[in-house]
Every structure is written in C-alpha cells, then in structure tokens.
Length: 238
Image 1 (cartoon, rainbow, N blue to C red):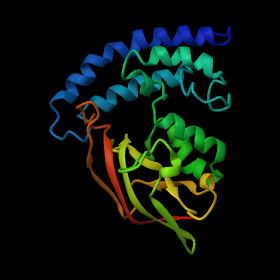
Image 2: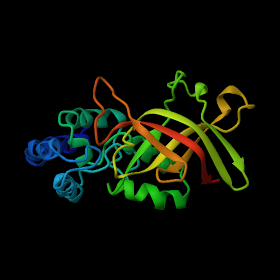
Image 3: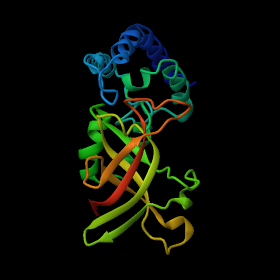
C-alpha cells in the first residue's frame, strides 16, 4: 500500500466502524417485513442517505476512479486494500459510492461517454443519486465471452432498435436503477471482435420488459435483484 493511500485506508476502516456498522442491523430489520419485496421499506433509504452524506462530506467517496478529478486517483492495488474493507459489510460499498455494477459503468461513462451522456447519467451516479445495471449475460450462450452475444441492435434512421434477452442482470430490480449499459451485436458481418457495441438504454424505455427475478445460490437478492430482461423493438437514439 502506498503512503498516499494509507490515511484513506485507515479513514475508511474507521468510518465503517463508526457510521456503517451501527446502522446495519436496523437497515435489515426494517427491510425484513416490507410489504413489497421489490421496493425499499420506509426508513431504509433514509438510513443509507444519511451515512452517504457523511461519507461524501469527509471525502470518502468514489475511490475506484483513477482520475483524481472525480475519484481519489488511487492505483488498482491501493484501491484493492480499501475494497477488502468495504467487502466486510454489505452496506459499506454503497455508503461510499463504490458499488458494483455502478463502479464499472461510471468508468465506462467517464472514459468514452459524450458530454451529454456524462451530464445525464455519470454525474448523478457520481453523486450517488441513481443506480445502474450492466446488461450482458444471455440465455443459451457463454455470455462471459462477448463474441457469443445474440441481442441485436439495428440502425433505423437515427435510432438503434434492440431485440433480445438478458439473464442475471444485477441491480435491475432496484427502483433506483435508471440506466443500463447494454451489450449488443450491431455489425454481425464484421470481424469477430468488431461486431459488438455497448448502448445506453434507460430502463423505462418502451419495449424494455423486466420479466422477473432470477436466483443466484438460492437467493433473488430483492430488491437489488438479478433480473431476466427482454428487449422488444426498444428504440434509443444513435
């Protein structure tokens, strides 16, 4: 661990012990008997937001981004030590705005997003105001290999028209999830590694159907969820 990272590491450990651990039992107690499993119980998000505001005020926020303008400018190794501490409490990553899949999605948006996309999606993600999903895995194919992706996006004028299905899309059940980075095949006649694209799809776009939750190791992880999603003639701007 670098000398730069050590004070942050110690601050994270102290913050989790002082602010995150004390709300954890109450957070899950509130959610245990909620009437609607795919929403948050009254008081749950208020607990999280209170702690998130404290973390942001103390600069314990967005550690994963290598760009010091939006994160802490940590190396992967330095962040790994912090991530170990975040992993000791299920609430810690969100309380410090370092939750997957938002982390990877924010990196993608920061590196290749247009100014308009950054304003609409990256900025509220960086502030911890919304959540996101990454839609890649599909039924019937080895989806860890992007060459196998079958969901199609066809250009029609100034819009992409998307059709296909996705499995186990983490976070898509959360009512705060507003945007998906969706892996699709846009050019099936191109070379093998040039057929795929990632397209931003707002989760409330007409034609996006949340078919239902799927279980991982016997749990559907409500209300975060691992969702089965169907795309039927979904239109998004080019």
